[in-house]
Image 1 (cartoon, helix red, strand yellow):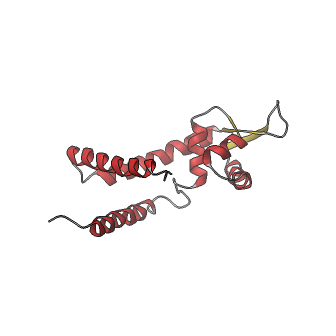
Image 2 (cartoon, rainbow, N blue to C red):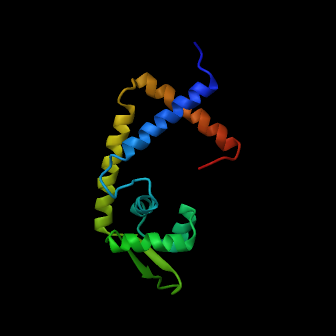
Length: 146
């Protein structure tokens, strides 16, 4: 039996909904897919970055990033200081507390990844990877990214 496009799509969305349920099992106030964690993960990979450059990378408006940065600063996860070269520019860097939070959340995400792929054999994982890559490439070629 060959499944229809509708059946495949519906099954895909069922799995996505189940993954969303799994993501809700993270401890309260931890959404590793939120803007705050995207920001922290990025900052963990650099020594420092300008607030303007970070806004461009995250593809968000400056006022939105300012709010996000303020929240992270209040939590003690990042520091913000004026640039010595340009007093209109803020430079951001992650603190040791921020690095520890990144390690903690990455560990939670890794656990989630294992739960997602646990029922799959090595061959299943390879086939799924090839199929998802094919779908992703198709949309990228059509100019649909993100």
